[in-house]
Amino acid sequence: MTRAEELPDVASAREFYAKYEPKEIIGTGASSTVRRCVRRTTSKEYAVKIIDLIGNGELVGEDLRTVTHNEIKILRMVSGEMHIIELVDVFETETLMFLVFELLHKGELFDYLTEVVKFNEKQTRQTMRALLETVAFLHQQNIVHRDLKPENILLDDDKQIHLSDFGFAVALEHDRQQLRQLCGTPGYMSPEMLKCAINELNPGYGKEVDMWASGVIMYTLLAGVPPFWHRKQMVMFRRIMEGNYSFPSPDWDDISSCAKDIIIKLLEVDPDKRLTAKGALNHPFFQHVEDGNRYFSQGFNPRKKFRVAIWTVLAGVVVSKLSQNVKKTMCVIIGKDPYSSKAIRKLIDASSFSVYGHWVKKRADQNRAMLFKNHLCFNKF
Ligand code: ATP
Image (cartoon, rainbow, N blue to C red; front, side, top):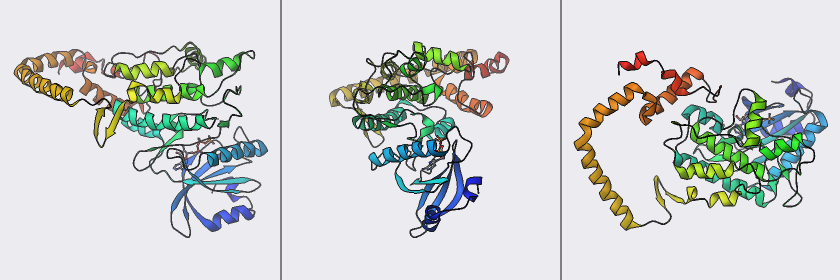
């Protein structure tokens, strides 16, 4: 039991305990504890976020209550949307608030990404399509999330995403309403939000901040590292305001120009030129339809497909004839620069995680390939 949970209950808290049986802690926030809980009548599992209004977080008391009421209001406005976490029940006392959510067993997208290192384009397309459809839905209702990041995206058993943490979300009074509050998470903040914080003459920011954060997420999914990160926060902020990022080789060599193009259009410093959620969904990167495990282009052309199949077979014949030479060449390449081989690069990336224990690049010059700069070791290859 946390300190706040031991405090004297009032009627609402008793109502919560009568309806649900709290179980183990599954997560903690700045001023909250998240527990698995079971509804007594149905034995169905949920997650309850228990918010400590008298805790030690940045926000306490009535301020925290007001923020949580806003979160509840917005969660109710978007209730039923497929990729948004479902708020099931709310109980409130003088010192505690209980928010009962659907339980998402697979945890945060952030942790999953840490486990798999990075996504391929197919996985990125699936995740980003769901995220952008959700953002389009929010923006259509004039809701800005303001804290999009892999930590606030939870996964269900089928690895479907569910957007959570609407603590900074705001419902605009009208489409073009400008906001000024600096909020969210530093690495995902947009240039216009930062500029607004340092210059009070700046006109403010709007929905476009979510599109910037979506660009940061997409870059991070594909690269396994975020685009602007620097251990000195001020340097990171400067990079963000300048839109200073790159697609370094060899990490980005295997990634299509189409994927890079949409990232460039999302990480556009000028919010008026940045892709909207609907615009992003219309980008060629998403013009693929998923059919089970197969992917095909929307302009499916069987003749073209057949021609490609023939070329593939012919190429296979040529490659098998050349295979002896290829093997020798590969050995030379791998011996000199193992990180340049895609298969070995994947292995290096996966192994380096158990060494670093974290997927964020810690220094600008840090590169997973550095782990394998020991030429002596690879001369034996
Ligand atoms: P805060 O913004 O108040 O600091 P937070 O965003 O860090 O909070 P919470 O919403 O309090 O996090 O959740 C903490 C952790 O609990 C999450 O990161 C997640 O791992 C887990 N969690 C939250 N809600 C659920 C849920 N519905 N199902 C499964 N796990 C959850």
